[in-house]
Amino acid sequence: MRILVTGANGLVGKKITRQLLSGGKHEVYATSLKKLQIPGAVTFTSNLLNADINFMVDETHPDVIIHCAALSSPDACEVDRFACKRLNVDLTARIAMACNDYGVQLILMSTDFVFDGLKGQYAEEDRANPICYYGMSKAEAEQVVASMSAPWAIARTSLVFGYEQRLSRSNIVLRVAENLIKGNPFRVAFDQIRTPTLAEDLARGIEAIATNRATGIFHLAGSEIISVADLAARTAEVFGLNPELLLPVSTEMLTEPARRPLNTSLCCHKAIEQLGYSPKGLTEALRLVYSQMKLDGYNP
Image 1 (tube, rainbow, N blue to C red):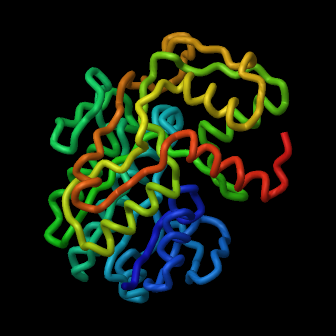
Image 2 (cartoon, rainbow, N blue to C red; image 1 turned 90 degrees about the vertical axis):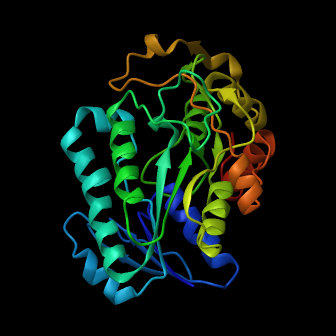
Image 3 (cartoon, helix red, strand yellow; image 1 turned 30 degrees about the horizontal axis):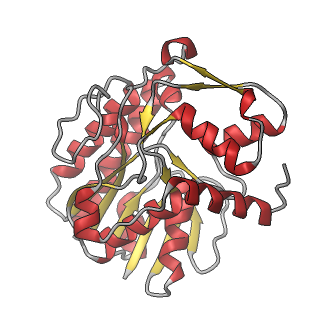
């Protein structure tokens, strides 16, 4: 199968690209905004906002496009709504049109932030009701994809974490480790409930969607429902860092530009039953990240 991954410079895009290459069954193309090398993949730099998407699809002839490129910082989306819409919605629409033209399946990476966080354990059929602009942009992108004539799938995930060198954006586990190593106090929300997702687990779920040519919406998240504060404490425990530097606070006290939904935990029963999705336990996942960092010279 020939697969094109957009946004391969980010954690999710990199892990998906590596997962697709691991079995030797796929021919993988990957785009990034800056120069990127992933052994085995055909990588090329492209500012997709200005690119001729139809030309890119015509040149690579993919069976599936996995669309990871996005503005995924809720605060950045809130501060610059124009840039957020252009990347998260307008680009998705252009890729969807190209997929329609060439009969290519599109898999869109989406988020638990399409939900309002009032109930938790959201299933795929629950109604989207975002409370921040990032969530709104992804909900709109989902609507664009769901109206395609070509095959499509949407993969929603939650609080993805993992390790790669030279990431374009950090994640909660790395931020906790970086601050605690430096002896810096680090504030974490005790009232935000998530299903933290190991990037490798997410990548395996995405590959399952692609290889099974599955369509529709799937939730691909971690196996444990936990607060962000408790996730930080678990990280400190696994990494052997000082948990007393963690300062649990309410979401209101964080005063971030974008509103955060409180409980966006995701139910993954559909993916487990239909795709064989099997995420690691949280402690095991954190140990994997810790071991990857140690191999790269990390020494707390």
